[in-house]
Length: 263
Image (tube, rainbow, N blue to C red; front, side, top):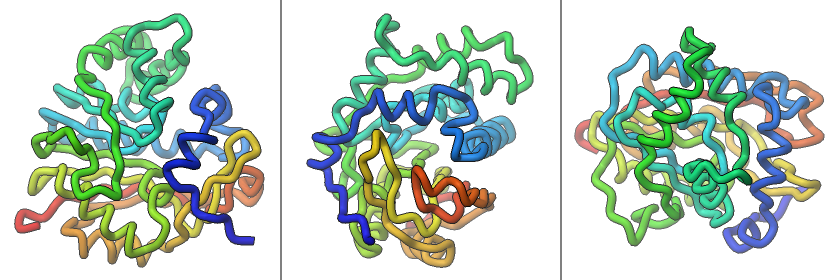
């Protein structure tokens, strides 16, 4: 049975940010049904950042209540801007930035990222550096021509987005438009890091289903080309059969691209 589209109002009313964190991020391995999907993403991110240039400003679109990708970027971007549609997701990040005692503990991820970078002992320095580099936490709607409206951000050097557009878009035409919308936030020649799921229609948080736009790799590559990106490389993670209790994705894709100069 097809899952009905989970629009913005549904997310604001039903999405529990803290339950999401406790379900998917209590362990660095992620949810026990995911079979190392989270580690797959982190290893690829660390590899890209460690072997690439340092960015002046990095923007994450649809960061959710999460900081694991920002931790990977810490030290590789002078400034980091995080963004999400759901108010409570932004609030979770702000709690951590203020060192609030009620904030979600990301130290286990800070240690893992430092271990992947070759020095696990630097995790406290990593957290401090991240707090210093995050300059803004903004409201974001990828279905708007300017996803950060009313804020007008200068185009950034690097854009990261993970499991966001497929949740925010009800059909393929909307997805293609969203890819163009976020492209407006990236400098020509700038780097896009996109993590997505293939052929998924739903994922579950606290026994509630949230919709996901179903598409395959061929569609994704075509949509990115049409939106003005050139793909530089990708890695595929094949989802285990037992993941069905939390989603129905067939695979995940980690993709690195750049915005074409004339886009």
